Image 1 (cartoon, helix red, strand yellow):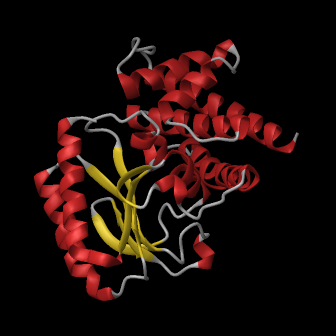
Image 2 (cartoon, helix red, strand yellow; image 1 turned 135 degrees about the horizontal axis):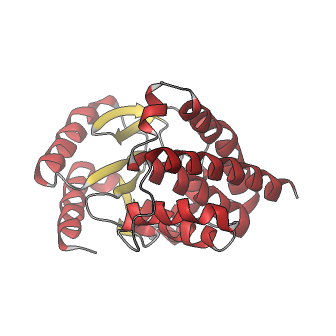
Length: 265
C-alpha cells in the first residue's frame, strides 16, 4: 500500500481504538483495496467497522469529528463505509435499523453498502486493519445469495441508470458524455458479469479485463476506453464523444441481456 494510504489507515485505526475501547471488534477494508486494484486519488477506502453493540446517537459527534479530521489531513483519501454491530453483521438492509455510515463526506444513518457483495467481499477477501481476523467472522454468504443480489441490482439500479442516460437533454444524458460516466457504466456492468460468471467478486479493473475476452469484438473498443480512463494503460480509443456514448449504451444493453441469460440458464 502507498505510504499516504497507510498513514491514513493508521490514524483511522488509532482514533477508533481510542473512541470505542473494548467495544471495538475489528476494522476491515473491502472494495478496491481488498481486491487488489487501489488507485490513489481515485479509489475509495471502503471500510467496515465492527462493534459489539449498536451505536447510540452519542457517537455521532465524535465520529463526525474523526472523519472531518481525516478529510482535512488526507484530502485525497476518500473513506466510505459503515459502523455495524456484531448482531447486525451479514444481514440485509430490511432486517436491521440504519447504521452510522460515512458516504460522500457526510456522516448519516443509512443502509448504504449494506448488501451481499459487501459481506461476501469482507469474508472472502477482506483486509483486517485491526482486530478479529476477517476470514474468521461469522459470515456465510452463499454463491446463490450473491448471484441473486447481483441480478436484482443489475435489473434495478443499472437498468434505471441506462434508461436515464438515454433520455435526451436530461442531466444524466449530458453526464454520459463525460469520462467518469463511461468508466462507471462500463465497469459497473463488467463487475456484475464477472460475479454471475465466476460466483465471486473482483475489482473493476480485473472484471473489465475478464470481460474483454468474453464479448464480441464490436464491444471491445469501449471496454478498452474504460480501462484507459481508469488505469491510464493502453491509449485513448475515441475522438467523438457521441460515438463513445453510443458504444457505451450498446455495450451495456448487451451485457444486461447476457447477465440475465447466465443467471437464468
